[in-house]
Each structure stands twice: as structure tokens, then as C-alpha cells.
Image (cartoon, rainbow, N blue to C red; front, side):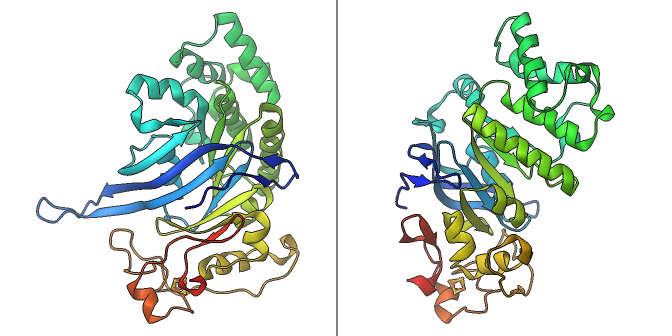
Length: 335
Ligand code: SF4
């Protein structure tokens, strides 16, 4: 896949350098129905390649179960990849020894979908925020306390919350604690995995605005994973559309929303409420369910649901092809 080396993001600021390179990444899980004689694998992420540029928000969108979260976790080795490479800030992660990888993780943080499940209910917020400093042995006692108070204020909470336990906070407050924890060690990349999906709509907007402010102030790069196209539309500079373990379309914000090419991406975009797009799109309804990742269809994985499928689509898998400056699509229509 061709490298994307520069683009202007939604704010018009030019991004130039690659922070993360993902090359032919695969993550397979052994299926529960697997036996010693018949091994079966869930191909959650299957040969995925893309770059994330410094300072951008890279959106990853697709239906539930398409492999988005697994891809995010495999990228920072929370799941050991089955194959492929991740090069972060020039360092190939696979080459790192466990202790080196642990140190490197300071640069890559994760915000989880469910703020209630991601915070230890038995310890107070002060101790939850102390954990990253303890684990990585960063700062003196006084420096840690000062940084924690600063981070709490920066995410819209206060020193009052230090002694609170997670169950005493609202969902939005808990996610703010999750964001403060992710910021603690001055990361370069934060992967936000459905970070606002569990929140009420009004709170979602506040948390998204907070993330956008923090991106500027802390020079952060985001990978924003969501099934919600409205959220991805609002926050992302470039967007990858994922289907059944594969990226099927990748492009900048305008290309994905106004010049959508892949039939699956067209169906997803058509589902966005008209008020959120410049031009109303006719709703395309997809038929059938997403096939099993244990036994994905041969050829194009979308052919069982695609209204434009031909015989070739069921026999030959389309590669991700370069269409224009930053636009890529995996579909035989654009051969
Ligand atoms: Fe549809 Fe064929 Fe394109 Fe796949 S390759 S999206 S089945 S037209």
C-alpha cells in the first residue's frame, strides 16, 4: 500500500510525519468449536495495512464484530498479533523485549468503552490515577500528586474527586477519569475504543469537545474507533471503513463522506441523519447478516450482501487500491 506522507486535516493544519505504520497485521483467535483434529480460527483482523500520521485523528468505523477493537488492541500489543508488523515512532514493536515494550507503552494509551468496567471499584480516584506512575516508576511522590491534581482539573474534575470511588461518579465523570489516566504518562497516541458509546448524547458531545481540546494542548494523535458514523464524521481527519476483518475503504474526511466508493461504505454513510451531512443521501439498506469471521466468504467478503456483486466478486479477493491522493478502496468496480 502506498504511503500517505502529508495531508491537511480538518483544521487546515498540515500533517507530515507518520507516527504508526501497520503492515499486514493479522489477529486470529482459536475458535471454541476448534478441536485437535480440526483447528478453526476466528480471523478478527486479516492482513490490514495503514499509517497514522502525527497530530491527526484517524477514525476506524464498521459494524459491531468487524474487528475494530481487536485491531486497536493488536496495534499496541494488548493482543499479541498473529502476524504482521507495527512500527511506532520508528520502532518495530515485535523486536522489543517484554520490559522494553512495557516502557514503550507509555507512548501509547487506550481509553476503553465502558468507563465503569475500566476503573477498579475498590480503590479511589486518587489511587486509580497513581497507578500509571507506580507501574512505570515515574516521578516523586510530590510530583505525582501535583500531576494528578493538574490532570483532574484539565479533564473538568477537581481535587474533591480524589477521594471518591468510581461508583460515586456519573458515567461522564468516570470517562473523564479514564481520559486523565490515559494522559498521565504524556502519551503520543491515544486509542479511543468506543470511548463515548456508553454515554448519554449530551455527555458524548462534552467528552468529544474535551478530547479535541486535549489533542491541541498535549499534541496528541488519536485513533478513534466507533460504530457510530456521526461521531466519526465529527471528529476524524482520515477514516478507514472496516468489514469482517479487512479495511475496505480509506480516505480523508471529505473523500469518505462525499465521494464514497465502496458499496459497504456507501450503505453506512447513507445511514447518517441528513442534518449531519451537507448533502442528503438516499438510504441504502443492507440485506442479511455479517458472515462469520471463522469462515468468511471467498472472494470479496462483502459479496454475500452486495447489490453490485458479480461472479468475479465471489472468486477473487479485491486488494486495497490507490484511487487518488489519499483515497483507497478494495472493490473490483474500481479495478
Ligand atoms: Fe461488491 Fe464486488 Fe465490490 Fe465486493 S468487490 S464490494 S462484492 S462490487
